[in-house]
Length: 181
Length: 143
Image (tube, rainbow over all chains, first blue to last red):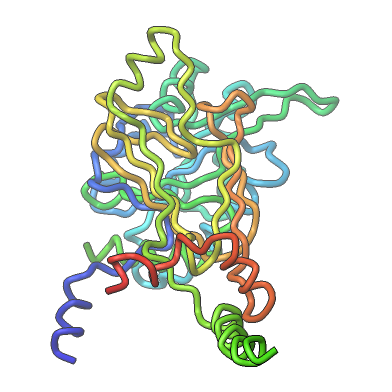
């Protein structure tokens, strides 16, 4: 019984997300923030960051992801201040800072978006292995894009990646664990 | 005639055990590795395929995708970038088909199909017949 307890205590609780071992520093970037300030990861040192990629005209994946993250933030209660959602656009032509701010505020006013030139955004996509495919449509361009969300701990280390489809409880669970570590 | 009468009960017992006993895999990981030198081989023009287009997992048996980068450079591997010497362990808890954008595939997409845990009875018996070598009953890990 004691041995089992000791073994359990030694083993870190498992995250719901996919875990990187060993963790490395999350690649840094500098973009224009939707809040008017330059957007870097260093700004959020000490917080757990959920880093998502998408665009404000996305009709299916992004609204679900952002609504889920907003719900997870509410579930964190008093600890929500230690959780930051960062959303980087894959559509620089339509997603200026003001457009991103209006889009993100609809989900949670604390969310911060990142935008910039096509080259700058492509460089960030490459750092995180984000796949973006632009497709024409009658209502303007559509983008097929990676839908997973990266989780970065308070020390700025890229710890995990949550695939699309996880519920808010899973995010809240993992964010709480990352806050403790 | 007597041989048949004697042999049938043990055979039925084995079948019943195979149909209803819980499945215990030696490891729940489904591992894939990028070997050292992969980047150099790709740069030399060689086609190197590591991840299949579709990976099939089974809940409660093999339901963890484990990706390891043993090369010297960062690699886009399935749904993410994995640094040299780093591994990425992705557990699945819901049976479904998961699509991941993946630039390492010509189609730009990789699928992970997670099947439900085989139900006791015929389904479990059929699973065991197809995957008997994967169970921990036959491996050192089970001891």
